[in-house]
Amino acid sequence: MVTHRTTVPDFEIYTPTAEEVHSGELGRRMRQFNYRVIGEYGQTQPIWVSAKNAGGELVGGLRGFVFLHWLTVELLFVDEAARHQGLGRRLLATAERQAIDMGARHATLTTFAWQARAFYVRQGYEEFGRIDDYVQGHYLAHMKKTLAP
Image (cartoon, rainbow, N blue to C red; front, side, top):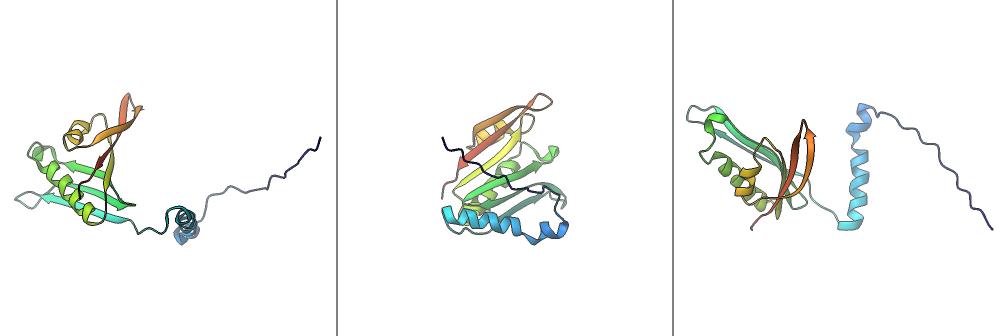
């Protein structure tokens, strides 16, 4: 019987310097790895939509980005006084239209149990995953939607 032995390299795990992080080297290496599988892809494109009331005060907005044909909604917020007037729906629809113009075919977001899951369902999103008890007995819902061109 032949026994094969392998040596384990000695690696140092460390906290990188700010210069190392800002160099972008790790991200470049990851992109090069990905390109071998799916080809080159474009940059992340931001989606920023805001709403002001008649007095010029900020009352809501959406922040997200498009990457690899997906709109990722990171934040959608409407002040309490401006809710239930269609503003959230309009903000989301505006962002989705912008994302489609940027080549997005799908959208994704996460929402906590106490936030707006039912609102997103009404806008055509479906829950595809959930982490129960994410924080203090509340779930985190992962949602997605196919965007019409």
